[in-house]
Image (cartoon, rainbow, N blue to C red; front, side, top):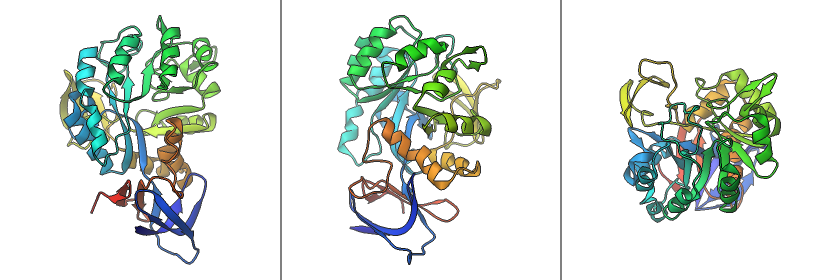
Length: 360
């Protein structure tokens, strides 16, 4: 058994105490006499992450393993490696060895498919390889990898039947890279649990006489992801989203240049320029995903004057609830021991994955 003492921070409370754990948390002792200045929080959960350290999900299992390890070293104890819009052959080849993750002590939970069933007129930095809804595409992939989340555009032809089948397969459905109007979104939201991909970005907005995907999310949504690198969305918009969407959670949406030096990098034929904490398509101002990790995200939320409890809620608890992983995202007895120890300045001191310390 391992013991940690400090200020224990969950989304709903903070208290001084001690946790005793192995793979799961065995016991929590509350004690005001414990004055350790360390913070003990749930490990970060990232449900939208393309890559890091030069590695990308679409390059196959070895890259998936290495990019996930980078994010684990920065406190992300649960991750969904995320695909780009591409062909069935490319996507299948990227994921075909994915089941290897079950054989290791890993932070990998499953896969997020971002596309290819998105609007070709709202690609963002996605490749122009969109296709119409295909349940055969999905069935081929779920034979090799657990698909937890899919991003799609609900306005595409054939989405009624497609979304019906995805719901039956228990795949979490998110609207994104979409030009749908409010009514299109509401039609599905009245029937299914719908989330939203990188809120504000690559979606129809909320003009005061014509509401789109953003309007549906703010008015009707219970869950949505948001990028908090302070490039994709500004402070005011993050705070508006937090007021409107009860279970808003942060994602990194990080791409392969995350963790690398500033410079020019090529990902799938596109030159990306990394400048500090920002990545753009070369010679443009078009954002190309983010180059932050979830610890950066947590730090940004603190800078924006979110409370520690709110920062924990947005970087772990809400995401766990969204994908129905109720043993994650909370420090409580019988919960999985995915735990971070932060010093009083919020730097990471220790990382535990399933009760095993992974950093020295």
